[in-house]
Image (cartoon, rainbow, N blue to C red; front, side, top):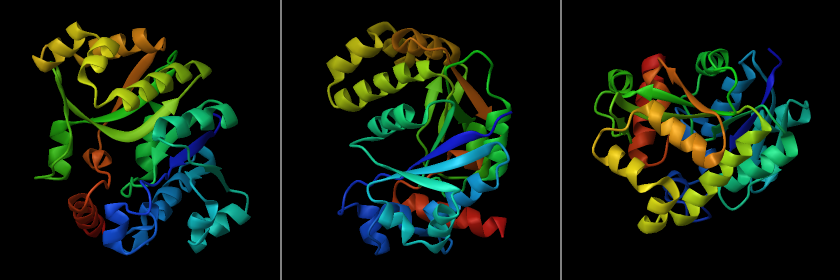
Length: 259
């Protein structure tokens, strides 16, 4: 398999990001987890993944990331590049697709627990003939890895799953999925618009616990004009990212457990 380009979304919520303020740093990507900045942990994992080639960090200002010696060294060695973050995650991915093409592996700078074997498993199990693929973990695996964690689970008729902040934009058609993502970002606080966008019957079936994951993917694919799939990771920790202080506490606990 030809090594894929990896995009790390490191956009900030602005200078008042509560996580960055609490940690005493200027940017969320610089927050230390187990003594190591989260962005460094993510880049290390990607560098150690045989299936990953070029790494591109999407951040407002490359100088922010270059404060970290390991990031600066990787950039100076030509192993890492930067793209400016756009106004939202979907806009950043859209810009990256236009600049970098496909296939494109996408993850986030707050995926502090990321491990090379998770990325390898994901890349090795990408279903053929798909345009966009997301990694998920089943609820039982997540709770076994991180008992008591408060994660957001999507509850389907055939089981609950949580996203793992790993995506593959496999073909140029993936732009359709990113466009739908942008629509969801824009209208997320307008319930009626969301119902029209996603379809009332699909939302009702989901609310009643009657929508299967496969049916949801088919619906998504029809709306976005893509062939969509998921890869279920057997690693429950892969669903843990750092969005709030409790997440950082959990991540550091899990890192200590690793030793």
